[in-house]
Image (tube, rainbow, N blue to C red):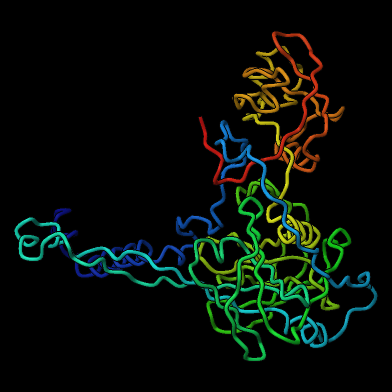
Length: 421
């Protein structure tokens, strides 16, 4: 047999290797363009409502301390739903939807914004022909959401982010009626808002006691996703008392896997009896659509916010006037603490309640009213529930020694009047 070099063998294999190499390169290009083919996911960020960071303001403008005129308005009349029955479930939820859906409305908000000029108008050569008196160009921005009629007086609950900054708000009922809405009040820190409409014979939803909601209960979400019209989806209650999500300053969410999509915000999460257990607010998603993790504000919290906005014009919360920081094990050891319990006072509002009580930056707050601080967010909610003017005993660590202080709780100023130092 004649001798053949390795190069000769390689040349003889080329007709077979070339298609294989082309196939590998094509497969690599497809996997790079479509990562889902390999089971990998893209790097999209979760879609959530961007909230303000939960923190106490470091300074307050003079308007915040000024007394505000009381609002003489009676509390809205709400319908209380009977306790939920957990006997054998129905084969259809049509009766529950028929009870609740007429009270769920579509909300269309719009605002006028200045339109960017053509890039050529920034060139002095072109501006000399038009001058500086060019009329401003405007355009209309529209957004959609949902709301729930909760009172025969025309009060509608929705999310603050649905109507925030709107110049005009239109409400459309399922029966075809439409009307403009008046904003009664908003609470950005809980992401709730109250509107009022003037129509006769309004359908009204019943409010359930959201403390009776249990994990595993069937839940239905009603809203206007993507503007396609009123839609009902079904799931269960996945969790209760969800917090630390970074959505709102005050969080106590009901989690559900009932499909919630953009446009559902402000709609109703209802029980199998047709009573409202929550206001649909946000989703956690990598694609922008529902992935089975939705959050609703409990009906009890929504009821309290509604009554305060209607009767007071604002939500009254207790306030100490401090900026707190979580205590990690390293910081706890540096302060001589055996466990990372409590929070560090990072800042104190000059002249605020905590400042007047003698609290200083660098103090470690261990307990409030005899209750140990285990979670900064829960403590913030506890302080908010205290009536302004009440006295609150505190336990702090300063310089390795425990001190007992008493602070007179003030009223938390609204976000627009909070001016960090």
